[in-house]
Image 1 (cartoon, rainbow over the protein chains, first blue to last red):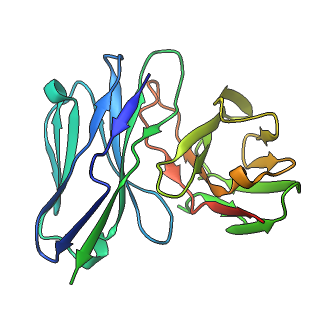
Image 2: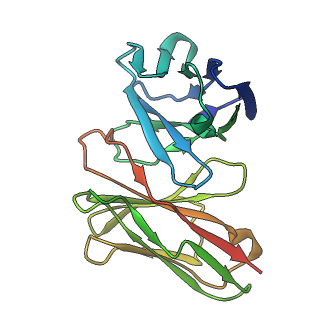
Length: 117
Length: 116
């Protein structure tokens, strides 16, 4: 069974602070994919990043960075110099590749980030 | 490139009524997914189509739920004899077909269903 845990339910930071959102996953598959999505108050889930299990290079995109550590089954997301527009619910998701053709994403419960001006 | 479109955005209905939602995926995407999201939770997978074939269904998809994608383009999700517990946001997503399923799923705005 697949499981994604986002232990932080809600986080509040003051604008310009850095913030890290934690994600821990469980899977028996040796090949899998990890995703982060952003859900602003408008409701649409916005794709942010995809990583595969055999590429542990960290990635940076502007103010966003991701730290994938297979040894601890974690895929954490850091926002540097947070802005009010970053306020949203962030979801981490897992897609195992078992070869059986299953494409269902397993999501965590999300972390609600509030950036205070 | 237009995104995934869902209609209606909101639906309020009385318990016991039938409801139908529509999803139009991104035009070149041949995979289409339905998820359900309740308050404070992440989306939960319901079902998935590749072209017109429904290839996977979650145990969450009870007999009262049916999804179709007749021509491999738009999809409909119907709920019969709605119950209070059906109140949720119903999300549709689409993706390109990748050999290992790693193509990201792009989501629509969702249809929020409220059962009175």
